[in-house]
Length: 356
Image 1: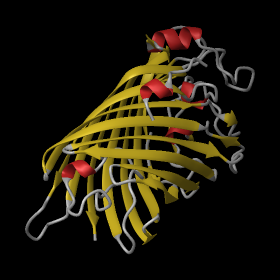
Image 2 (image 1 turned 120 degrees about the horizontal axis):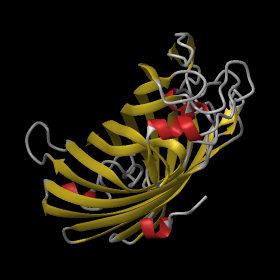
Image 3 (image 1 turned 45 degrees about the vertical axis):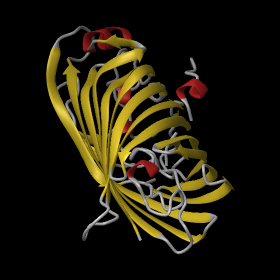
């Protein structure tokens, strides 16, 4: 697999933010962009609550860095299940668009000045549109269908451990684990190349959870000078064996860095780069067998470099004093996918935070 230089792409993600450990009084630009999580610690006895909404929108397909049409996919891409009953030699179903809406709730608590505990749960809704081509070969379209899933996803718990702090520069360790609370047995009705409409177990991208216990290690650096705030983070998601359906998603490695500027204590803007790489699926769910790319275990993962811009808002007076609102919008600069695989068009994150 080709490698995007994650060093050049910078260092990546984990939960909300409050700047109590940066200044006596919080400021909007003390926070990392809302899409960065686990970027700060709290003082002993502090709590923080957060809520986020994130949408990811995908449309079209690519192999590596090249976009491909549905007709190219069904005439050239082999089906790994060919030879099994009712399985054609090439793919015959192609996803065209997908949206993922994630609703995340987070909590942080600091039992000491050097340790902050963090937990996050998530509810996810996914929708994917498909084109089905007639069985056999050729490019005759049989029809279209849409699949949908929604449920609570995996749960993340972490410990943030301070390693270095000289007021202007801070480094801490992110030590987390992902608990497999999300389902991996979601089903829906599909349209087959032979015209049938069975209800089947959906392919991997439409499942809610990973089904595996995963390690989530990372390290974060944050610095500030005047009205400027910057930082970098590197983290990973490492699968600990196969799940109950005999597969595991690919390990994921991320890196991000950001730069923020505060126009005032209540408003700041940010720019961020994020690079990521993820492996393909290991093993296979025996109930996921279909001539569609999302069911093919090799067509998952790849490399991405995203550019994001954002803003943070902080209420400093009145009944809502201390409440924060963050927004961040990102688009991919590079997508090198183990394809055919759906392209990402954009991501949007909106979040609220309150420390007390």
